[in-house]
Length: 142
Figure (tube, rainbow, N blue to C red):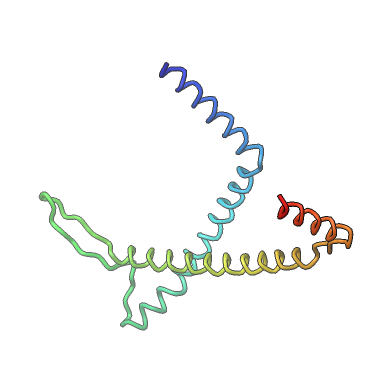
């Protein structure tokens, strides 16, 4: 009995996967990943080569890539490079901010499109309005 349930779930999963592929979501996802990867490289370059050197000069000629702490763990000297971590956090925040603004712009365009669609909706003819009134009256009389 359990084997039959597992087989049914497996078939359902396969059917769901086929529907997913057929809808084109995979292509949209692939394009998003590729663009995201390229965008990430741009933001990383902006952070590493422009912003962090400027921030380093502002806070006293500090090169964030060289900031580290040396710790003795289990008789081994380990270097914890917290400067690179700070740089990656800044990188993430810039990426998140850019994505936030892109989504905000896209939502604005989508909202305008929905409003345009509502405005262009065809007006109901007098006959349709009359038939709807008759229908409503018939519902009330029952």
